Amino acid sequence: MSGTLVVSRETDDYRCMGHGKLMAELVHEAHPELHHYTTAAGLKGIIESQQLWATNISYLNDAEEHIGFFDRRLSHLLAKPVRAAVAEIATTASDRNQIDVHGGVEKAVEESIKDLISLLRTATLNVDKPYVTAFCSAVPNATPDDGLLSQWRGYGTDGGYAIVFDTHGLERLLVEESKTFHYQYPFILSNVEYYDQITSEKAAFPETLEWEAIVQKTIRNFILAKKWEGLEELAGPIAALSCRYKHSGFREEAEVRIVATPSSSELLKMAQDAGDKRPPKPVHFVTKNGVLVPYIKLFGHKSNGSLTKLPIRKIIVGPHLEKLKRQKAIEVLLEQNHIEARVVVSDIPYLGR
Image (cartoon, rainbow, N blue to C red):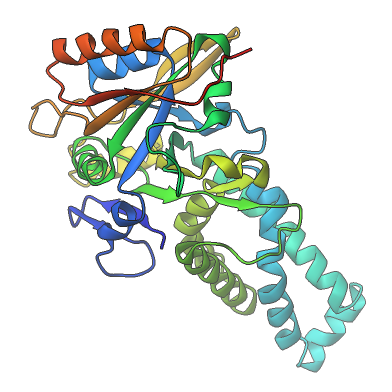
C-alpha cells in the first residue's frame, strides 16, 4: 500500500491528486509513523519552536534533485505518446511529406521529445521553487527503536537523533499551514520513487502512474491539436513527479517527503487581487559550508493565530558511548517544553568510527 497526500485549501481536505476522492487515510495507514533524523541542535530547535524546516530542493544532498526527472525519466514517458501522435499526423499525405522532408518519422519523434523536455524543464525549474522536509518510513520487520544504521553513520562521532512523528497529525498540520500561507501548489506528502539506470521501468506507486498517465495523454493531445494552452495542464503533474524522483542509491532511506512550493510573486499578486488574504511564506537562510541555503519554517501557527503542536510520539537517541546521558537530557528538554513523548536509545552497537 502507498499513499500520497495532497492538501487543498479550497476543500480543507486531504485529497489524493488524480483520484478525485478523499484518500487521506492512505498516507498514515501505509506509514503510521515517520522518522526525521537530525542533530542535537536540530532536535533542540524543533522541540523549542514546534516547527520543521523545509529546505530548497536545489540544496539537498542529492545532486540530481529536481533535475534528475528531466534528465533521466521524462524521455521514457514521452516516447510512447509522441510516437503515437506523430504516427497519426503522418496518415495524411501533406503532413507525411512535411515529416519526410525534415528527416522522417524517427527524426520527428526524436526532435519532438528533445524540444518538449527542454520546454518542460525550463518552465518548471524557472517557476517552481519547491522546499522539502524529508522523513524515513519505519523499516519493516526491524526493531522500532533502532533506527537506520545508514542515517546514524551520517552523523559520525556526534551521533544523532530520530524524531518519530504521528503521520496523521502531520496531515492535519499541513491543512492548517495551507490555510495560513499562500502556496503555489497543494502540499504533497508522498513516497519517493527510486530508479536505477534503466529508467524505463514501471513506477512503484499508483499515484505516480496516474500523474505519468496525465503527462502522456496531455502531450499526445498537444501534438495533435498544436495548441500551447494544452500544456498548462502539465504544471501540477510535472511539479509532483519532478520532486519525487531519486536515484536508487538512496533507496534504503524509504523516504517520505513533504513538498511545499511557496507562490511566485506573480501568482501571489493574482491571488491577492482576487481577494485571497493569505500572506506569502517567508524564506529564511542558514549558512552551510560557506553557502547561504534557503529554507522555510513549516507550522508554528494556525490561521487563527493559535500555536500548533508537532505530533511527536517518540525520540530515538542514536548509537553513542554516552547515549544514556543523552537520553536523560532529552527527557528534561521534553518536560520543560511540555511535550509528552517517550525517549529511547538505539541498540545498534555502532560507535561512529
